[in-house]
Structure formats: C-alpha cells, structure tokens
Image 1 (cartoon, rainbow, N blue to C red):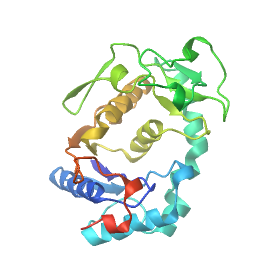
Image 2: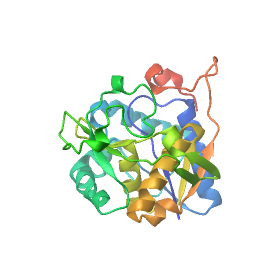
Image 3: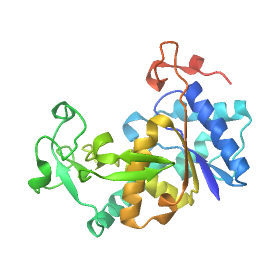
Image 4: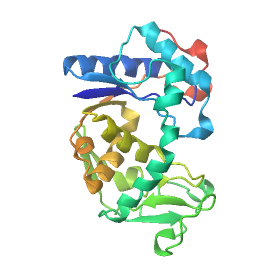
Length: 248
C-alpha cells in the first residue's frame, strides 16, 4: 500500500498544504502504507526551481520522512520530474481512442466558456470533428449529461461539476487530471488524500481510470479533508502567499 504527497511547484506552499502533508502522513501511518513524494511539475509554464526547494524545506521542517521519491531538488530535476515524461503522457492519450470515453478537439477559449461546459463546449466542437493542433485546440473528454461518479463517499454529478473537461491543453501540455491518473498508476497509489475542493477532480480521475481499466486508481481509498481558510473565509492560494505565509 502507498499514499503520496503531491505538491505542485507553482508557488510557495501555504498552511493548507502543510495540513494536507500531515493528514497524508497520518493516513499512511494508520494504513501501514509507504509514503511517496510526487511533485506535480508537468505544467512547465509555472515551474520555478525555488518552489521545489521550498517543498523540501517544508517537509524537513515538519519532520516528515518518505519512502519513495527524490531527496533533493537536484535529484528531482534529474530523475523524477514529470516534465521528462511529456512524450509518454502524449502517447498514452492514444489509449483513450480504444476506450469507451469519447474525446474531441476544442478550439473554444476560456473567455468563450461562460460556465461549466455541461453538454459540451459553447462552440459545439464535439460535433465538428476538428484536429488537435498545438496552440489552436485542446482535447476534451465528453462527459454525458447525467454522469454520476461515486468517490470517497460522495456522489458527484461530474457533468455539472466539471462538464467536458480537458485532458490535453492548448499549449501542448498534459492537463492535471491526465497526469495524475498516470502517475498514480505508476506509483501504485492506494490512498489519496486531498482537500474537499478537489472532490470533483477525484471523480474526473475515477471516470478516466475506469474507462482505461486502471483499477488501482478506481479502487484507491480517497480521503477529502476540510480546507484551512484565511481571515475572510477564503481558500488559501499560492498566488497570494510567499514563504512568510507558511508556518510549521
């Protein structure tokens, strides 16, 4: 069995990240599972080395030890970075063609998407059959209206929560949902601990994993914990905090 710490190096960590680390460590301990460090850096556009440095600083300050994964920023960049596997993620998209899931190239911009693309994007791209072209289109998964996914004790109306979500981005990079299931398959993850704000993401990943036959992701134990909020009751954000925003 294995649980994983999965920080994204898109900003300095905040108190909510630390809370997730502690909770994940506790889940691994209670399940007698290994603990892995999986740094989600597939989004090369937001990567900064100092953010990875901060991950190791925080884990050291918390006294959290892990069994699988890099021990330093240098080791991470040379041997563990997801950016080395972009071509593999692209190749695995081909598996979707042989699955029950329907995909389509979407040229709609974010400004075109006034809300969740339930029933498809506003441009009707699912019916156009256009090609996937870097810089022009993203690859979306068709989530039929009425799709319900059970995950971690929750029943998620995936079409209403995320709609036809993206698995391959317009900038020719893999989307988070896609990378996450492939990396959890790679690690053999059995316990996934996330904030409550990511319940819909868990449902999207179960939806994909079920179609692809990745039973380890479908059958994993999912724990979604309450969030730590700021003084105004808002979810903490990396974009608004620096190193000073973290306390151990």
